[in-house]
Length: 205
Image (cartoon, rainbow, N blue to C red; front, side):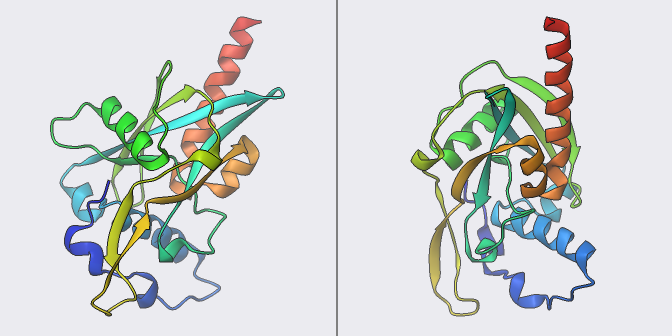
């Protein structure tokens, strides 16, 4: 959902000069840029606002795969490892957290979220914002994904507004690959999903 408001004029990429030794700074920049695009900044964190998301998984050939989305927009063009995310977004005032997660999932993928949801422990991001997340088993064809749009000034300081998809593509990844692809602050969701599925597998046997 587009909540850039006045932050739409902020272009993080143009204000940071990359240095190969600045890996920790890059991690923080990636998290911050994604939050700005989603309208989820340090301001929202201080206000106690939370995000909600869904982690869809499927079983394929004995392995578990998860669906991740790649953020759209010029900042993310050409970025891959450490750039993918679960579908998520801010919870509207008075909105149920799970309903918000389901809404964001459908807005960013075009697929309705259906199935038995189970909660994963909330994770606090480097910005201080907390993401409430549920996992569920399902399936979809990423080629049929259709995301909603957001607006921002582009090119920077041009005075022209352009529209971009919040997510420009989706893909299935096995858990090992997903750990490399996903934004660092969300890796805990993959670890918890794997732990819970492993527990259920042992109980079933």
